[in-house]
Image (cartoon, rainbow, N blue to C red):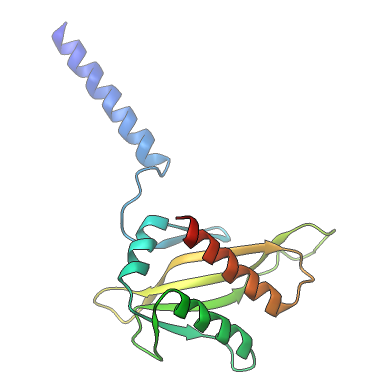
Length: 160
């Protein structure tokens, strides 16, 4: 009878462990994002630790779009990060989200992503550690949309 109780507890503990790990509740503390279909899934707590540890930020924007570069630099300054040209702890950029094709009606859709990258240890490669997606109306001006995604990200930082 004692053997059945021990076996039952083992099975129950295994089921709980599989359920917790399989549903994503047991995320590791390491930052990073994985792309699932068209959407990035990122580890918020890991990213927060990476953001707190970072001292420098590089900003990537198009030369023909100085507004986005200014907004990203302002974001970095608001986070108390030094802006550098290369060898930064983090990299910031805003990119348009690929369209699904045909747009029907006035419904909201993903417009832009604020992507934040961190240098992977022992490499010179930068990998995404946070992706903030802004959803809205497709007829918004680019500058307004960039401002909106940055503001949304700042609100998320303030809440957590």
